[in-house]
Image 1 (cartoon, rainbow, N blue to C red):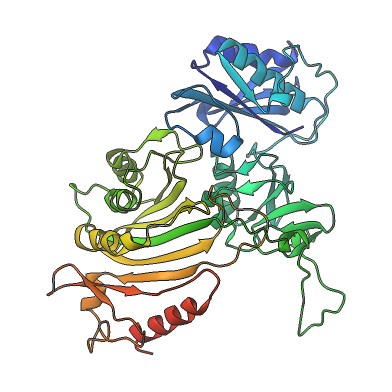
Image 2 (tube, helix red, strand yellow; image 1 turned 90 degrees about the vertical axis):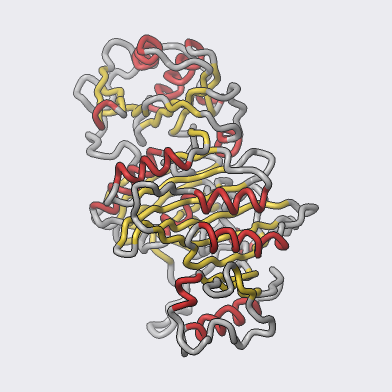
Length: 470
């Protein structure tokens, strides 16, 4: 049974409904709060945590429960309340399920997964014995090298739980390792969190035990963390790592993703409104603005550049991270990192759109989208790639292949700083396209690519060396 249970309800869970759910373990189970009341815990009579419960979240964005859980929620807006059972306690998972079932019954909704919340009966918690939990309720195993989180959900998303665990591990200078069953996928918002060693996505596998879901390397638990196994024929000079057979089972679906990464740099100004560049390119490529955003998944707030700006200003000089999603009929997701630097206010955006076998990515709209960013939103640089990958944007634990670059864009300020007019004369077969005013243009560099041909990366590397003067 899963360790995470979620109640999706039409009405806000009242204090009475929450209390009824919290008493699922009977009168000998006490209530504690952490995080200034943001997280409640069911504890036994010795104060040891059994179940941690996040404060209810009002979701005002359609499609998030379907995307992250495969569940059918009430119509938006609805309330999302998560409960997480402590690993290794016999009754904790049943207790979390009963909590969610009671909450769903009292606040008019449903619980996910359905099999975890079948009973409203009191769960016997007598003689529970476990080690006291310290700090993070989402962390299941803690060593001097990594924090390990066990997730049994269809999609591992950047939830408030996981975000807190990631920050706690980073603060303690530890890696974060997330362990999942083989059928689980990642939200794109989570993928980048595994970029720093020894953080990794650990997939349980019948044939190879464990493997890295992003690289395929077979893993073993050794020296207090999951680390790559060594092949029998490895040597000190060639430390080979076997690749899991499951990771190599490539499935051809005909689906594609259009991935856009870009950076804008704005002067720090009281009139500055962030998110405009993202909305401009989103509208240009889909015909509609983003649907919603949030500081964690599910994205729960309707799209609002003003609210994002207010949040970033409130958090400055600390950076602000958020996720932005599209409507259910056009899979799209972006992560945005806003930072205050000596250059001004920087927005680093990673954006992707999903397309089915019979859908054509709007490649012809890319020059116009790039021009909007370059002329109106102080674009510094942008890279566009086309990938053979899932339409729903979920990251599977198998090889999907790299993207192929379609275009690179360099902002007007960067062009102006280059000597020798090298930005206009490149070794590529196609000449760059000036964007914006002739006296102060940005440059759009077409990189014709095909997902089955990696030569586009060779062109991209040649272009980068040329622009750097190498």
